[in-house]
Structure formats: structure tokens, C-alpha cells
Image 1 (cartoon, rainbow, N blue to C red):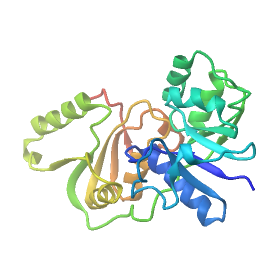
Image 2: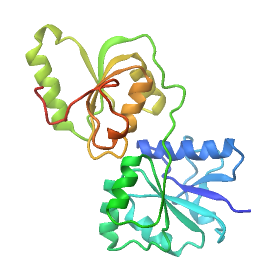
Image 3: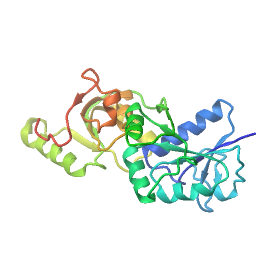
Image 4: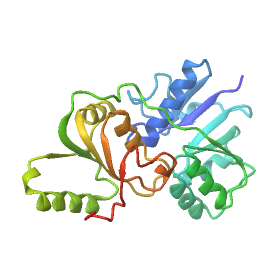
Length: 255
């Protein structure tokens, strides 16, 4: 019987890492033989599903599927030699194209199937010249992302646009001194349940997104009942409307 293996890093840190975990746990709940595999000899991290194993211990067969991330050029290159079928989980087309640039060329006979997180991401991939099979699987969100008792606090993730986020925060305090006491909470060094708690209690989410295929953080903020203000980073065009956010470019510090 064929098995489904998702490549993972021992410590999940990005939205894409958590989307992969959700894929595997959902497949397992539906009765499919799916598990995560990770590099090295380390014991599996407690945040990966229980049956995760080192990739070098897996006896891949021609009927198996190995799902790999889009942004790791050495991994994509080494996957050419794996006996199983290989599927690329394209969580960000910008990063995928950059990885392909590093490889020189993508072997579309070996990598003939790509999963995308949004229609925007899939269209960008096809427009760039990829001719293999493309499937869109929108990510789900855990139930612990939900509104709680709100307070007047602005949550934001400065990681991708630290200069822009700092500039907006400083301009806000300068232009509206009467609101200088409002807390700006940087979403950094939090595990996912801690992140959900902060979003659930925050009234506003300031979005500083850049080169996104979807922007999971915005969807998490929406599900947590935040008023979303800011930039959806491109990929959010699939869902961003005048009814679900106040959308401006991150560079528009004074708007």
C-alpha cells in the first residue's frame, strides 16, 4: 500500500510548517497512511505528529508519495534520486521561483505535480511557465483561533517588513498623541497557541505582509475576530475585499 510522507523540519517555525502539519493530521484523521519525515538523527520534535521519523529510515517505494517544500533548492535537487513520486507543496511561488533559479531548471517529469495554497499562487506558477499538474488546497485553521474578550491593542508581525512596521507605529504615536498609550504587540517568539491567544484578545491586527501567496497570518487574525488593517502582500487578493479589511500598501505609512 502506498504511503504519504511530508518532509518537515524538526522545529516548526513558519506558517508553511504548520500548514504541512495540518495536512498530515487531517490525512491521518481521514484514515490515510500519512506521516512526517525530518532530516538528521534527532528524536522527533514534540510539535510534530507522533509517528514522525527521520527521512533516512524510510524505505521509499515507487508507489509512495514524498511531499517537499518549495523553497529548499538542495532538497528539491536531492529528491530527484528518491524512488517515490515527489510532490512539491508550493507555499510561496516567489520562493519557489527563487529556488528554481538556484537549480537552473526544474525537471517536470520528476516534479510533475505541485500543490498551491491559493489560486493567486497557482496562476503565478502557471504564468511563469510551469506545465505540470497544479492543485489548489486552501489551508484550514485550528479552532483555537477564535475571538476572546477584546482589548484595545494592535497586534502586528514585524518580521517581513520591520522598517515599515516601525515607521507606521512611530507615525501613529506622533500623529495621534491622545492614543499613544495603545499597546502595539509584536508577534514574535510565540508558539501557535500563544499567538492565537494574543490575536483573540487584540482588537486590531496591523498587516505588514510582503511577497505572499496567501498570508496565513491575516486569515488567523480574521478568524480571531480582529479588525485587519494593512497590506495583504499580493496573494491575499483572493479574499481581501472592502468588507473584511482596511487595505493599504505597507509603504503607505501616512494614509
